[in-house]
Image (cartoon, rainbow, N blue to C red; front, side, top):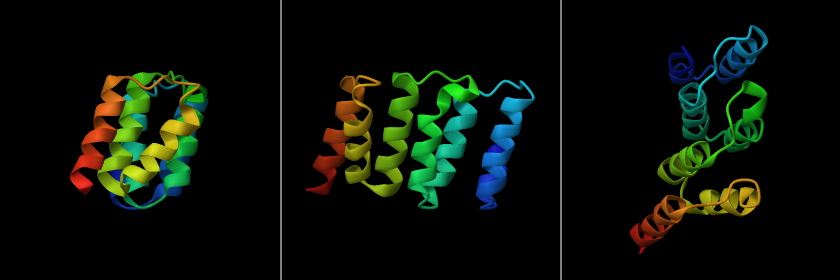
Length: 113
């Protein structure tokens, strides 16, 4: 549902739907959040995507390295490495980047040159 709403560019409805899932006690998974983040980033709504990551725990999804690397990967693929680097710096004290995180950044930088 989140993916279809995102494809239709109904981002307000996506965010409302995810919020309603939380209120109803429905199981919000990392997969659901990843789809929402991907659609937001693709449409250039970076602040909304990053805010969604900031508030992951409100949806019952842990702010862990898997969620973090998913956000970084999406940012690199759709908006470029600069945004991903900014997010890594912002959240490095909350989620410690790992070798996968740095590999994504290095490969993205290498592709630029």
